[in-house]
Length: 355
Image 1 (cartoon, rainbow, N blue to C red):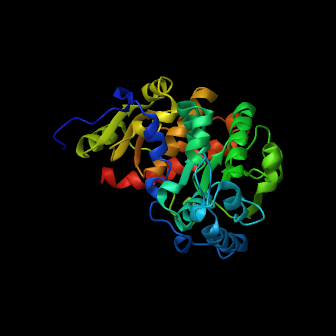
Image 2 (image 1 turned 30 degrees about the vertical axis):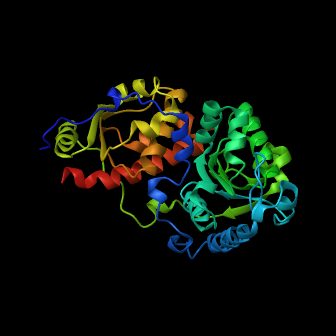
Image 3 (image 1 turned 120 degrees about the vertical axis):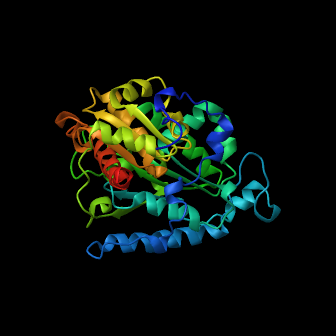
């Protein structure tokens, strides 16, 4: 048994300063070491191999581009206008168009790593993290902060909120004018059910004036997190979860309904900080979420836990019963399926904690 009692997420209310939001705009820990050559294309899905080829070329093409903005001088000391003349012609962005679990984030992070620029000149974050940055810094300061970058990668571009979509599209337009290259994935618009993926044509229509800046790149395939893997472990008993939490240094232990209530009091931009230092998350009495607002907060927490590779050990209902049929058939279905997929993977990682 551990010498001290487990931590509790419900006891945490982190404050995240704006400079940390900027500094943390890098691929999350799970994707620290990914590269194009560690992506394993499904041999039955040629679009995956093609995606790697195109993205490698896109990264190489950025070697001669230099983002110029905020009044700074450009490549080799040239002024802004002459530096921009050296920016390669054609689309300045790529949009990775595929369902959940086909490795879009792996490829997006690989693009970040492969782009020939210092880490301080590249930014990687989710759409939510980008809007949080605008909220913390203000629009103009965010433009100035990111205009000196060579590449901005946006994972899970959210098109559910028209206001946020317009805000970020306007921001990206300013960054493109400054010479910043873009790469993005997106979620599904409300009412867009289909095959669990957001169609590129719809994405390009929603971002309107930026459409010409993106080259759509479709990636077909099944969810790799369950490809050839055993079934996710069934939930454990409350006593087993509690015992594992006490036996695991750095683990947290929370009652699931209490955690859901606590998440409503913490801004989603702080969910990453909420998990700082955790080696495992142990949850008792997992049950279906009661409403959509709660469900969407849980999706963000699941993303942050998955990014940080924090295993999740749970009792109660299995994770594939978290969301109602109505939710799974609604406009946010892709988010919910992604959360189920990621939590299932983390539950598989946590199985050894009981043993």
